[in-house]
Length: 412
Image (cartoon, rainbow, N blue to C red; front, side, top):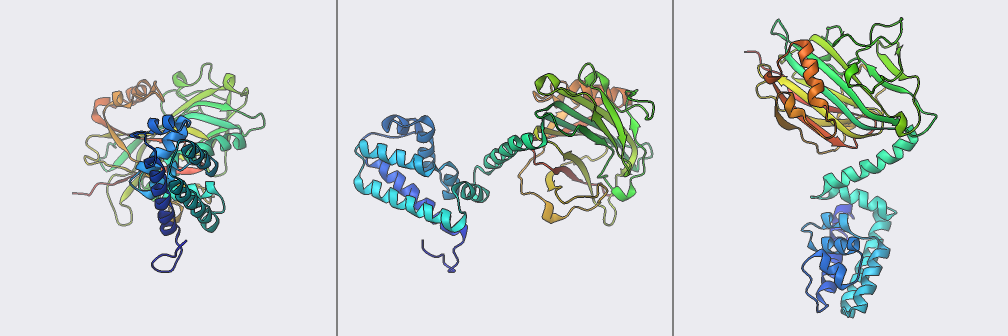
């Protein structure tokens, strides 16, 4: 392996060099047989390979970027299967020899930079110009499966909906928050039973938040020691799961399941709704220029839907960006600042989906429009006055905070 222009064997330089030579060698093998090959299916048919291996070989050859091509590169044993098949079909001996030499350079790349092939694939995936989103989700899906076993539970869909409108004084923001856990089940008997903590860890302007929490609707009485829990009973599992409320010293209230059968028969759904009137200032101030709407991921989850409905008069140019921060080192729930070094490099986009609750339709949570319509009706907030935005994340990182960050308004 030659050294790069500066004399340093950087991963990106060396990988680009090695994958380029391997792509060229694969192309030479394909070009040395008399059959016309114009698509992946042709490779599988002519060389009598599996559809997957034929597709991988074709993607390596046809990718425009070497690091993107690396995401489709078969394992060493599968490459040997391809080369043996090519030899039987009359491919050039020189072309096959060049491919095996390139495969040797790939082995050297693994040894130098990663130690094993799976680690190299993960490192190159982070450098690829194309296909990174798919690679990231693949790793998150793998983590979801492992975390489901470790934590003993898994959640089909997490819904977090924030509804923002001007407060009565025109200076501040009223905010309603709906939290939904849909399809939560245990996969191991000895598992922690806490569902969620009720409260707000990250205010739109944390130092200025002063509103008391209010339950939307009548709530559900769990025991005589606590006020009614802010459950939206009509949208929870029926019968409503057996829960209890537990106070914590930091002022948060946790909901725990008291009876929770194992597996799909014990799958539950729990939805809460809370109102925070006059929650925070709507205007920018020195050191306080952005609002953060946060969804905390604290259990293995297949899909996170993070929605926000913004009143048309509040932020006319509302355009949130999605950020994800690790919470591995976040001990204090009330920490106001997030460290940039905890930000995870995930490329996520927020979609403007339309006006009113009808825009919140989703196969992930089919009842979402009806549920949010019910909340708005109880608050007396006309649905048609709100613009809807949505972030959908497959297999969100555990533990993390998924944040929709937006600019506060300038005072005129």
